[in-house]
Amino acid sequence: MQQAEAELLDDLNARRAAWHKRQLKVAERDAALGALESELETRMNSIAELERRLQTQLGIGKLAQERRDERVASLADLIATMPPQSGAEIVAQMSDRDAQWLILAIARKSDRKAAKLLASMPADRAAALGQLYLDTDPDSIVQKGELREGSTPVLPEPKPPPPPAVEPAATPSAASTPGASHEAAPDASPPTPEAKP
Image 1 (cartoon, rainbow, N blue to C red):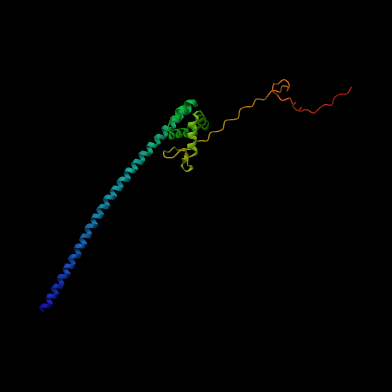
Image 2 (tube, rainbow, N blue to C red; image 1 turned 180 degrees about the horizontal axis):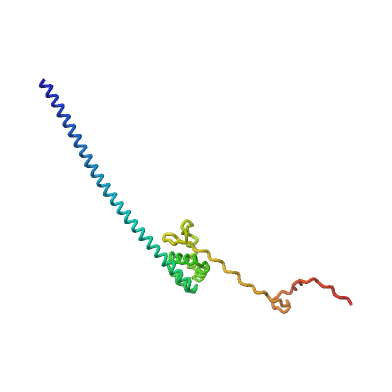
């Protein structure tokens, strides 16, 4: 009987050791899980802070962009009131991007003024701005007439100049006009029969 008790005691001790071992593993897992939860919470708080900062910066960026748009529109109004040659000298010295934005802002109010401004620029500068217009991606066209940085504005196509006025030519006789053709112009009235005597 003592041997049976000893075996039972050994079995009980083995089970107790296995139970303690499992408890230790569970405690280790709980500790690891707690550390992961803490790290996750820290990261979530960090992400929330970054989102808050980003929203603030986007708001500031939007406000800054709106102010820049107002300045561009104001400068465009000033340049549009100048004689085309004076305005062209100013715009021609600006960066490509700023020149495009100004010409676009002027064109939104008056295509004619924008065309005169381009026509008054040095040919190479006007050609460079024209090439930028041709290279513009149609998907970057700003909607609703708003200027937005990061998109390339589309310059208006200049309107062709009106044809020169044609003055009615006087009808001097062919013999009295130097260099004129010696062919007589056909008479528009029908010939009249000559009276016979």
